[in-house]
Image 1 (tube, rainbow, N blue to C red):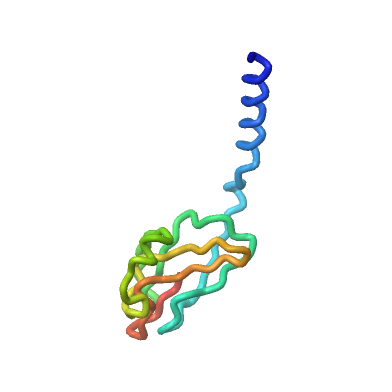
Image 2 (cartoon, helix red, strand yellow):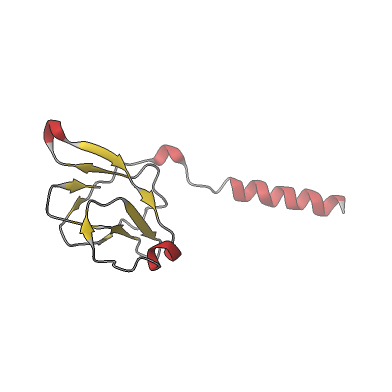
Length: 113
């Protein structure tokens, strides 16, 4: 039993050493197009650290943090084509990751993710 306990501990140490390195952060930007909800992301993406949207441009630009939806929360939205200022996103981590915003960006201003 002592050997099994030691082996389990070593396996957990090995798995914890395989987490992504946070020092490999990079800033990814995407200008959002009015009426387009889903955008393809780089394959190397593992997760978002602090996703936010910049509303407007220049000295009047404002940053807001947006929150994630799970696949269940996104599926429960009755009108997925509603347009407005994006406040939430759904990260679809498939072979080619995609991010979907809700509400879908409108044409009232410039949104940069």
